[in-house]
Length: 121
Image (cartoon, rainbow, N blue to C red; front, top):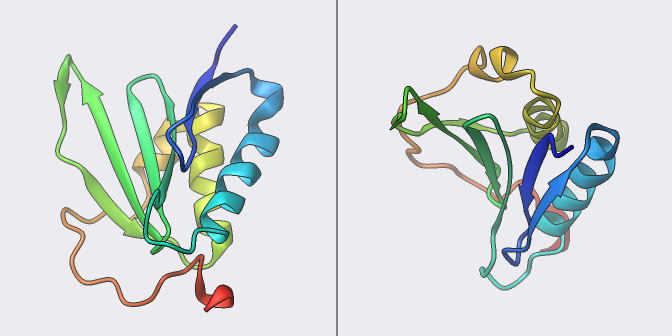
């Protein structure tokens, strides 16, 4: 039984069971940490109409479909790395109330530095 879906940096879609959460989330975050060319700069996890995308900049986007309608995206900043791991893990585990309770903002205005590429530049 598939419990959550993932999208890798290169667009590969995956369907996963609950025992794969840690492995999948760590693999996705590792992909962001090795991005060097401003291409393929995001990964995502989705479950039950809720999708969280993490960008190499550390921007996190929450997109949801509620009552058959798309809700406006909301944003937050993942800092440090563990913030991104946590929110992706919560989505994969189905802890959607915890995800929704985070301090989301209605727009993605001016983020400063890339969180996941700092060590590689």
